[in-house]
Amino acid sequence: MSEPVEDERRRARLVAALEDAGVGRDRVAGCRKLDGGTFSAVFGVRTVDGDGLVVKLAPGPGDPVLRYERGILGTEAWYLRTARERTSVPVATVLAVSARDEDGPGDHLVTSECPGVPWDRLARELDAGAWARVRAELGGHMAQLHAVTGTEGFGYPALPFGPLRPSWREAFLEMVDAVLDDAGRFAVPLPRPAEEIRAVIAAESSVLDEVTVPRLVHWDLWDGNILAEPRPAGPRITALIDAERAFWGDPLAEFVSLALTHDITVDDAFLNGYRAAGGSVDLDASARNRIALYRAYLYLIMWVEARPRRFDAATLDWLGREVLTPLAAMLDAWHRGEGPVAHWWSTG
Image (cartoon, rainbow, N blue to C red; front, side, top):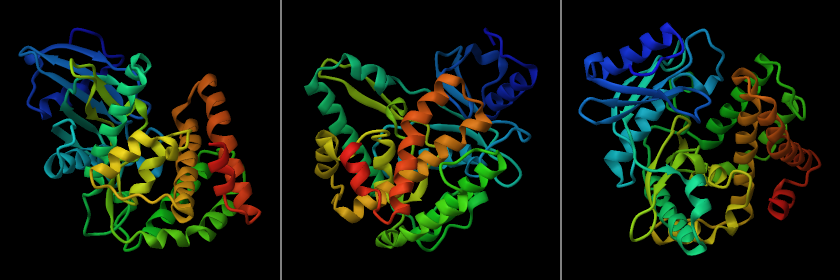
């Protein structure tokens, strides 16, 4: 290793992960810690042959994690393999994975390195036409992924949530229950008592019964997890990364992370690309209610995970403004019997 790894325990885990991928110490030309990960420690490795690898090390068994995070490096490996086998969407190749589903979080994941830079960096340099072409390309990729269907049920594939559930409503409400239990476990203040949040979300959940086919959902496709690079004919997407949160569910859930704090309905380039590639989306009132439920769930995750991950003051301020405040407004609207649609879709 050409650069120091911060502690010997992590260094030993990194060596073990590389050996699991068939890369001994004598084949490592360089190693550096990568920025951006908030769950796993992520390292970029260069071999003596010039190959690039990415190694993810999950928190250790004694480290605090949310319930859905147990075994999620195994979830990411499953997603990447499924996407490679059943679509032409660019994703990394899985080289090795070790995941403990029942008694702790996943241990490590080793993949090929993907070219490109995060979309949020590249997008700043593009004109409107180039930006729209990449968003349309992204829509086409999502339509392919959402055409992948499951046969065993809905929900997270990792064992802490197993087995998969026969209905999407049952699976989703279990997912919400888990993050609310995590909030209690980590003493995270919520905008309303956990039991009230459970009750209002359950009261709105009948629209989830419209989802009858489990489909592959990445669930974390914010701009930083979309890699792209400039090319002579225009920028192209080179990889979709960080699929630890993936599940079998409603593809409309994807539209939340794709427009994390914005309104996906105004992203015409993405929606046109999605439809042109065979994706079906009708953003009627029912669909918008489902999206609002998924947004509430994602915002709960983002707010609750801040405690065990010990985010800094600046991140907490951003979360309070961009996540907690709109979450509270949606919950208040539900509590008043109005539903969140009028609030979110007029201000998002």
